[in-house]
Length: 116
Length: 116
Image 1 (cartoon, each protein chain N blue to C red):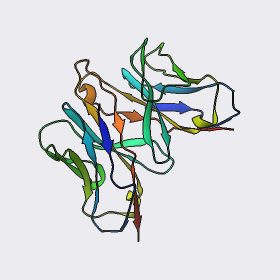
Image 2: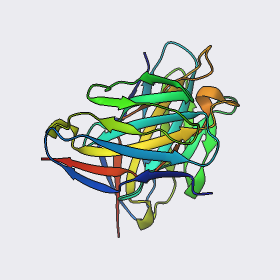
Image 3: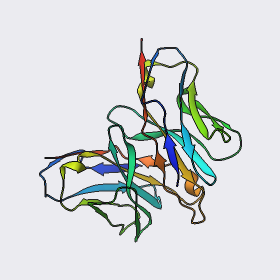
Image 4: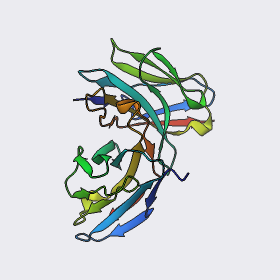
């Protein structure tokens, strides 16, 4: 069964500083990896996803993530954060499946707190 | 194109009451899911559907029922509300055909439920 671990529940950072949000996954088959963002009192929206190919994935709002199969990680990075990046970030995984569908498993989330 | 819509936005119930959370999408998506979000727990899958007439249980299905009579609608029923069902509920949908497990899920704005 698939699982996701987000190692940090909260990451405080100053504006314009770089940030890395960590995500590790566990799965016995090929996986698809996602980062979703949730702004206060809103639903989730997709930041980026890894399906196959290049291990460096670029997403919206200047975020990027790198898939590392040997370390089973998919860490999210941004070189310079803004106040508006304050939100909760969720890593998620789904597995390859003969049926063509697999449920999405989420990590517990990391709250990114950007201060001036 | 309204995307995924959920009603109501807020609801207060007394223990033992029943209610239905509504979810609709206008993107002709095959796959629809219900999640609950609790502090420190991330999102947990309650039920999902891979098409009209087909539903299956997720990680936390107890106390909830679903049905999928049309492609557009996927209501979630609480049969006898309990305080443990106090949560934020999100509905999501995905196309599900082209990329299968790699498809992006689109989330509704959520329903905040308080059970007294």
